[in-house]
Image 1 (cartoon, rainbow, N blue to C red):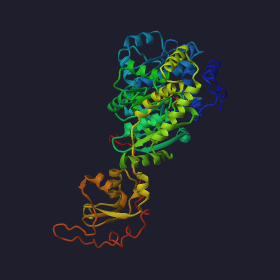
Image 2: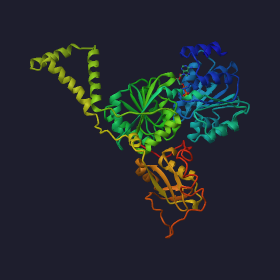
Image 3: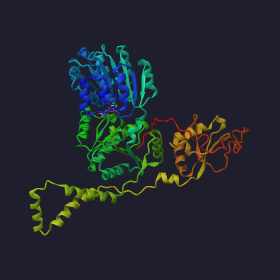
Image 4: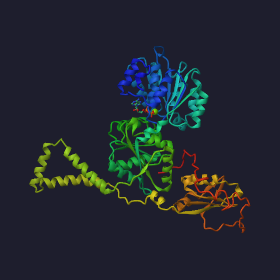
Length: 575
Ligand code: ADP
Ligand code: MG
C-alpha cells in the first residue's frame, strides 16, 4: 500500500515523498489509519520496521491551527538518542506544515534552552520520561490540552526503570486522550500498562517481523577463551567493513575494547550510558559521517539508533537477552537491505546460549572458521594492487624522489617494492596468530555416546523429572533434548548425558539447586550410593522403578526431553 492511498494532507504526502518513502511497511499500513482515527493502539513489531513514521505521520497530521499554543502530542522515548532521532524524523514529516512545532527534551542538555523552546509554543513534545516529569513539575510543560501520548520502545523504557515516571505522566494528563504504545517485545508489564491506561485497545502484531533478521547473513566464530579481542581484530582486518558496530554487555568492556582497537590502528569509538551527552552526540556524528568506522556500544546506548549503511554487526559478548540479539543485528540490513552479523563465542556455555538464540529467533546462524592469516595476506595484496592501480593523484615530487633514489642505485622497481613492503608489513605484523580450535559442534556430533550422571536427590524430596531437567537446562544452557533417560530413585536420580559434554555438565552444575535443595552432581559409576549404610530400595511403586518404570521404557525424546526453558532473560555476564 502506497502512502498516497492514505487520506493524508498534501503537506504530509509531499514530505513523505521527499524522504523517498513509497510503500508503507506493514506496521505503518496497519497502524496509521487507526491512529488517524484516534484509536488506542499497541503496536508490536521488530526494530527497523519504521515505527517512528507509524506514529510520527499521524502525530504531525493531527496538528491543527487550534494547537498553536498547546502541547497536543507527547512522545516518550527511552534514551536521549532516540528522542533526538524521533524529533529529527518528525521534523522531516512536518517540513511543509509550518504550524507544527516539535520540541525535544531530555536529560544531559540545557534546561534553560528547553524551557525557552517550550515557551515559544510547542505542539509536539518528544522526550525521555525523567526530563518530561521534571518539566511537568516546574510547570514549564503544560499538558492540560494533550490529546495523545505515545510510548516508543515501551519495553525498553520499563527495562530502564521508567515505570513509575510513565505511570505518573499517564495519570496526570487528561483522561480523554489517545494512548499509543510501540514495543518490540510484549512482556506482562507492558500489558499491565495497556490495561490500566488504554481504552478499547487494538493490538497490532506484525508476524513477519522476523523479515529483517532473515535478510541478514548470520555467522558465528569459535574463539579460544580470552582471545576474543584478537579474533575481532582479525575479522575487522579480513572483512574491512566500512561501517560496523560491535556490541559488548558492559560499559567497562566498551571502553577497554575501544582502546584496544584504537591502539591497533582501527578507527573505532565507543558509546555507552555513562558518557556525557555532548560526547555521545560527537561519537554518533563521527559514525554517521563515516570518520569513525567501528562503533563499540552497549545495548542500551545503541537501542533504536538508526544509521543506514552499516555493513556488519559483531557480537563481541553474547546478548543478555535473546530479544537483544534481534535488536543488535537489526542495526545492519535496515529497511530491506542485506547485512551480515558475526557472533564470537568462547566455550561450551556460549555455544549452547547461541543455540538458544537460534531457536528463539528461528534464524540459522552458521559456523565459520576464523580467517587464516594467509587468506588475509592475499586479501591485503589485492587491496594494495587495487589501491595503487586506481590512484590518480600522483605528484610531481614523487618523480623527483624516485629519480634521486635511482641516482643512489635504488632503481624504480626496487623503490616500489620497498614502499609496498612498508604498507604490507605494517598490516600483516599487527595480525594476531591463531590455532584452529577444536569445533564444539564437531565435538558434539562425533560422539553420540552417552554416560550417566548421578544427582543426590530423589523421590524422598518429592522430585519430578521436570524439576531435574529444568535445573540441568538452566545450569548448562543446554536444551532438554540433549539429556536422555531420567531415573528417579528414593534418594538419588540418574540422568543420561552426552559423553562429550560430561565434564562441562559436571562443571556447570556444581553447585546446583533443585526445588530449593542444594544438590551434588557426579559421574554415575553404576553403584547406587548408600545413605547411612542403607542401600535404597525401589519404592514399590512400579511407575518409578527402573526398567519397569513408565519413564525408563520410553525413548528419550518422548517424555521430558522437549522441555525447553522459558528463559528469555539471562542475567549472567559473559565475555
Ligand atoms: P523502528 O523504530 O521500527 O526501529 P525506524 O522508525 O527507526 O524503525 O525506521 C527505520 C528506517 O526505515 C528509517 O531510516 C526510516 O527512515 C526508514 N523507513 C521507515 N518507513 C519507511 C518506508 N515506508 N519506506 C522506506 N523507508 C522507511
Ligand atoms: Mg524506533
